[in-house]
Each structure stands twice: as structure tokens, then as C-alpha cells.
Length: 103
Image 1 (spheres, rainbow, N blue to C red):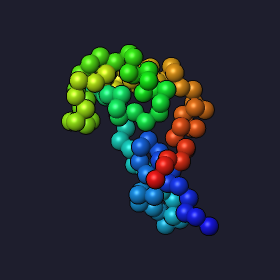
Image 2: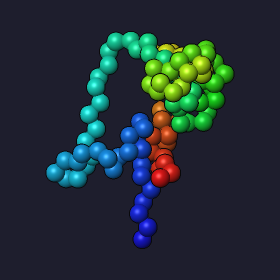
Image 3: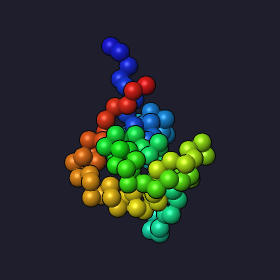
């Protein structure tokens, strides 16, 4: 039987996470209650529909997540999150986060 394709959640390979005694992956994400004015660019987005939307709606700038991404369509993380909430339903989020990614 071939090895299953790795599953990625929020861009993190589940196979790379530490596991508990039962073998369940442990994902400890910080809780964020402030604002995030860092620039996120379309090159950093894997989901095609969101990347295409950011390509059209973003303002040319430099990405704060990858220094090689300069003069590309960007917006702040907060702006992107707000629009993503409107564009993507809860069921879509589950589908996107659970989709196996190519190796």
C-alpha cells in the first residue's frame, strides 16, 4: 500500500507535528487578540480562488512573510482575514484545510 499523501493544516504538515501519547498531532497555535498590519502577498496563498482575489484586490507592495516577494499584490493580514471570512464558508474552510497536498 503506498504511503498516504501528507495532509496540511494551515500550511503545516501534520506529519511534522509532535504527537501525544495516543499518537494524535499536537497543534499549539497562539491566540491573537490584537491587530496584524503585516503585509501578506498573493504569492503566499495556496488556495487559487483566494490568491486570484488578492491578485486583483491587493496593492503593490512588499510581503512581510517572504523577503523575496517584492512589488507584488499585498494587503494586511487583517484585511485578508476579513475578506476571507466573507468569501469562504465554514464548510469550505474544512474542505480547504483537510485537502491532501502534493508531496
